[in-house]
Amino acid sequence: MPTSEARRATPRAITAIAALAASALLAGCGIGGTSPSEGAPPGPGGGTAVQTVAPVPPAAEDGPTTMVMVIRHGEKPDGEEPGVDAAGNVDDSSMTRVGWDRAHGLVDLFDPAQGTPKPGLVRPKTIYAAGVTDDGEGQRTRETVDPLADKLGITAETRYGKGQEEELVEHVLAQPGPTLISWQHSQIPIIAEAFPSVTPTPPSEWPDDRFDVVWTFTKTANGWHFDQVPELVLPQDVATVIEDDEDA
Image (tube, rainbow, N blue to C red; front, side, top):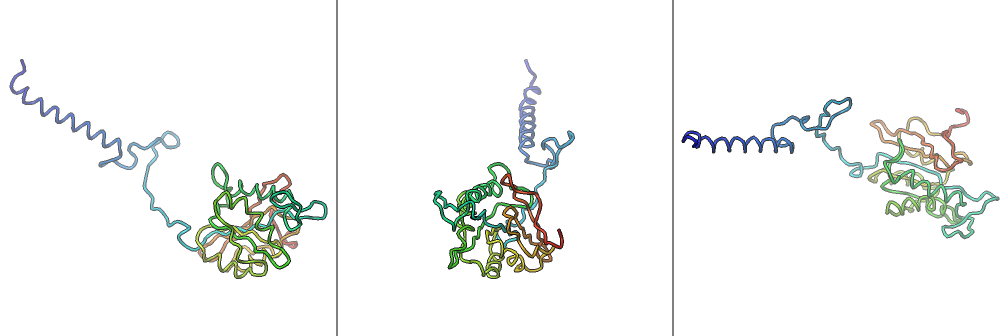
């Protein structure tokens, strides 16, 4: 038979065991006085990865844009290949079939099914395309981004057209989130000139034969940083960037 002292000790022992179990449970959940590294998964080389809670920076879409990407519309009729509309009907105001292939390739470039866009690019929150001019120009700029806009569930903004590049940039820079602009190639250098304090200096002309480059403008403390990202979405695309003739 247990002694009276042993019987009195039993409740205390049970209480101690319960307290230890509760402490272990709380530690496993990350509650209590444990350090951030306790219970963390192994880090590189077998060490323990320190888990810390970093402050969350303000979301880009909460303020004026800090990233603008500019592309030329897809391939246009050249006398050998006609333009076709989205339904496949001949329309020389539209892109060629190659241009449509590029438009669909841009979907994977800016919004890949897996992962994130290639370095230097981001998913746009807003898309601008040149509005139609009196002679019909502008249709190809919209066709180029229509597949991407459909995928992202947004509508391309077309309030500005060829000849309104300064107004376009002024409006874009006041909008939130990353922005993509689809435009006529002859006017893209004018878009670049409308950005304040751009370095390095963008090329002064966009070649007639290049449809495969993205110009990017990233906000810095002193202005905007200019860069170029080859699209490489079609077999004929090249990995080189656009340069002024004197720099080539």
